[in-house]
Image (cartoon, rainbow, N blue to C red; front, side):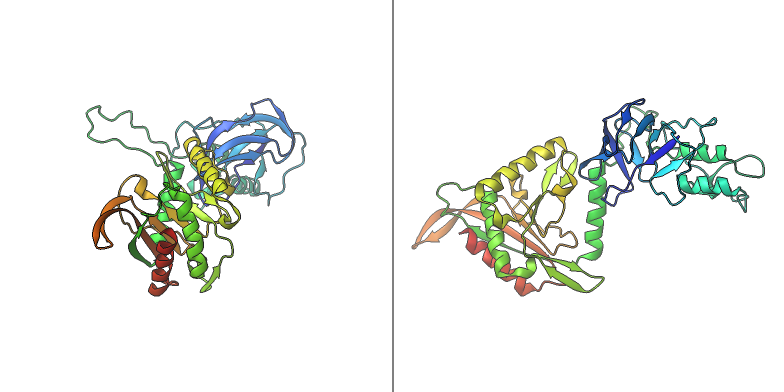
Amino acid sequence: MKFFKLPDLGEGLPDAVICKWHVQEGDKVTADQPLVAMETAKAIVDVPSPFPGKIEKLFGKKGDTIKTGYALVGFEETSEKEISEDSEMIVNISQENETIEQADTYVAIQKFEERKIAQATPGVRRLAKQLGVDLSTVKFQGKTITSDDIKEAFRLQQTYLKRDFSSHSSSSLSDNYLLSNVRRAMVLSMSQSHRDIVPVSLTDDADIHSWKDRKDISVQIIRAIEKACAKVPIMNAHFDSNTMSYQIKKQINIGIAVDTNHGLYVPVLEDVSRKNNNELRQQINRFKEMAKTRSFRSQDLQDATIMLSNFGIFAGRYANPVVLPPLVTTIGVGRIREQVVPENGHPAIHRILPLSVTSDHRIVTGGEIARFLKALINSLK
């Protein structure tokens, strides 16, 4: 059987979840034909077939988590020719007594310290390398590791850890949950931000009393960000601490934080300067629908140059928005409130929009943040 391994889908996570199979065992497929839809950190990605052939086995069902580099599809063998050792995605295994089935539960393979050296023939070592099996973790009988031992270790490693809480008492005071891919991605990105960024925040209010026609607030904020970036270009930049360099981006690509039950998505409005207000609103609405169905494509979530979090639609006035490397700025928008202000010597009620700006203080100065915030406020009046 010829095995196609799950490739790296470009999101930095070690695995992906099977969302939907497009094929069945026994189907004949062509090169580049979609095999399966995989849910990565934040997008659903179709994985194409690397070559034409007949499918002999599908490894996993809907909802199963598959590790990157592990078997995804088994193809019927069409040639005796071996696949080269340096192939990263495809491996060959003799079909003698080797039906490899998906494990229902990941079983940890304990290392046996008393076995000082794992003895194995070159062919067995090559098989272990192709399947990503660490010889030191393989349980075996006798003096040497056999190919069957490798295949058994491979079988046990196919499915990501699944915890069975069925033995918990019904009177338990808490429930346990494994994080979804989206929330695991959030763990990684938030941890990186906390580790790498030196954040500084500044807050103020914009008086939007002049918005008599109840303008589209999201679009107006996007236009204000566009103008403020023109005034203070460094806020729309990427910073690389490894090279101690930064790039001021000519395009303004705004990442819009979208909260869902699954976790946080940040789709990107690309090149907002080239879109009219109707186009911006239509794209925002599309992002909302895509978040509900988790139908984002990878390209929808890439290449942001600055980020916007409109948390005020729920609650709150001010915040310290998180900056995600390599970005240097995140704008937070709070809940609009009515406030009494002096107007021509008399009290008047105006609508007030709270604003918060957080930047990476390693590269952005306090003065630049203040000028950027001032430009935002002036553009919103």
